[in-house]
Structures are given as C-alpha cells and as structure tokens.
Amino acid sequence: MPLPLVDDFRAIVLENRPLIDVRAPVEFEKGAFANAVNFPLLNDEERRLVGIRYKASGNDAAVALGEELISGSIKTERVAAWKAFVKAHPDAYLYCFRGGQRSKISQTWLAEAGVSIPRLKGGYKAFRNFLMRESERISATAQTIIIGGRTGSGKTLLLQHLKNAIDLEGIAKHRGSSFGRLIIPQPAQIDFEDQLAYDLIRHEAAGHSHLIIEHESHNIGRIYIPQPLFDNLQRGELVILETSLEERIEITFDEYIAAALSNYHNTFGDAGEQQWFDDLNSGLDRISKRLGSERYLQIKTLLADSYTEQKNSGDVKAHKAWIEILLNDYYDPMYDYQLKKSPIPVIFRGNAEAVRSFIEFQEE
Image 1 (tube, rainbow, N blue to C red):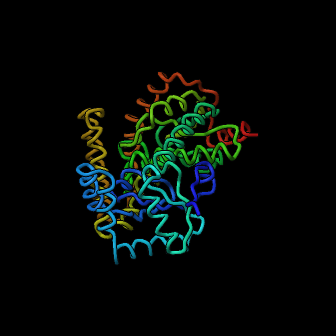
Image 2: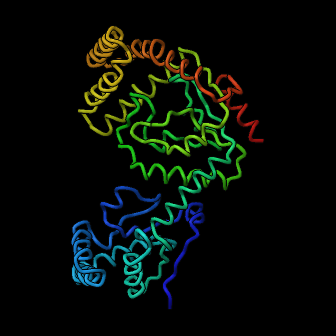
Image 3: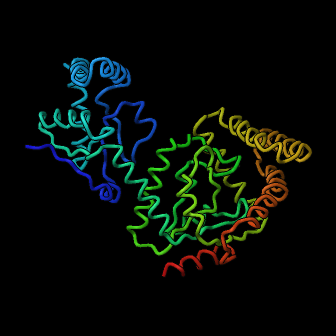
C-alpha cells in the first residue's frame, strides 16, 4: 500500500495542523513552521557524518551509514517518540527538507510500527515556497489600513481590539523602538516570515475587507519585513491615532516600567530589577548620538535618579519625568518628520474610540 502524500498547504494553515519535523536540530533552529515539533531522524552529528559519506561515496553508501547509525535502541527510541506524538495528535503530518528520503524512511518505520501518517509532498521547501508566494499575493491584493501615531499612542493596544488586524510587532517579538526588546528572544527570520504568512492566509480566509497593521519601519528589531511584502503593505492608507502627551506618558510607563518590571521579576527573580535597569540604559545608549550629548546626559541622569528612588522607596512614578522628555523632545519630532515625508495618504485622524469606530465602519 503506497505511503500517503499531501500537498494541501492551505488546509494545513487553516486547520492549524500539528507537524513532525524530522530534519536535524540545526535545520529546525534556522526556521520551522507553526505547530511543528522537532523529532529528527538524524541528529546533528549523524547528519554531518552521513553528509561526508554522501560526498565521498554517493547516496547508497550514505543511506547504509544512516541505517548503521540509527539501529537498535536508537531506532526504537525515535520511532517511539514519533508514535507518542501521533497518538496525542492523530491529525499530524510529517516532513523533512524536500519530502524525500528522511521523511519517507520515518514514515515507513512508523507504518511498520502500525502507525499511518501522511508526509508533505516536497517537504519543508515546498511548503515554505507556498507560504512566501501567498504572502506576496495576499499583501498585494489586500486593502490595507495602517495605524500611525506618535510613540506611546496605544497603537498596539488598539490593534488588539480589531478582529481584522495583524500585529507585526507581536509576531516579531519586539516593540519596534530602541527600547523595544523583550525578555524572550526574537524568532528566527524564517519563523517570522512563516508566521506572518500563516496570519495573512487566515486573514484572507476570514473574509475581512481590510487588513489593519501598525505603521512600521522595514526593520522590527533585528527582524525585517521582506521587501516585496513591505512595499505591498505600504500601498495602504494611513489612519492617525491622536493621543494626548499625558496619556502617552501613562501608556509608555505602564508598558516599559510597570509591566516590564513584573516580567523581569518573573523571569530573573531578585536580579530582575537590576537587569531591567541595565537594559533600559542599553536602549538609551543606542540612541545617544541621535539624542545629542546634552539631552542624553539629562535623560541618563533622570533615569539613574528615578532608579535610586525606586530602590529606596519602591516608588517607580519618578520614571515619568524622563519618559516625558524622551517622548516630547526625541520621538515626537522624529515621528512628525517621518510622517511629513511619508507618501501614504492620511484618510482619518482621531482618538482611540474614533479610530476604532472608523475602522469598524470600513469593515461593514
């Protein structure tokens, strides 16, 4: 009986289907799909040895070495891991890089153990090519509304209340500014691109008339939006979220001070407060040249004084002083200049309630 092959990649996305990736860990770390787990046929060292044998003696010799390396208890353990996952996720599929020998061997061993699982036709490469094509196609045809606004306006908070929005910063695990690093690391570039493709495909399938995103630069931390996709998204229309300076100080304080301190404590324990302060200083150092020496030293001093007050009394509200200067004297002029140069047409301005109502009206 032939081993089942599948190539309905869109269904994999829309069904949120679990996947077994049998590539080596080094391949998986460079990029993998959502809901994929890595249960490799060959570990990194085995893959290296098989590759050397392949170059020296050809495919048959490489396969023979692989069978020698993965035999006995090693084979039993790997098949058992696959079986356990399939038992927990009976709708799972399996793949390797090109859908060739590694996934076929894994699929065969599972079939011999009484477990049937389809494998992806063309493997990782074919599925990823599908995702990249769909990203460009959907972004080229979507009616995009871009939410802009000064730093701290609450753009991300607004996105979270819109069912037709895609949070690019959320996918990139970065808040987009020099202070935007999160405790958790950013994903691999490939993982970002794949997840964005998943979200775009689901967005299209939901039948939304507009795609809502935040006004982003080409780079979000160390992640970049692929140029064709970025160009497509920038062809939309701009809605400006207008928020008072006082509100923006509070929003920035809540995110970068209150919530961040809690996250750092949860992650680093007693060392979290110092790590948080060190990371804030690093963010400030990264923009020191653009701030100018006088303003940089002013904010640096206020940050240090606020931290001392925080250590002495537990009161963190003093941080609002340097946040106000940073927003008013640095981020606001920079954003206003960028907005003035932007070729994207502005179609609406208003506060959070007005912007949300406007966008929801467009969707009707």
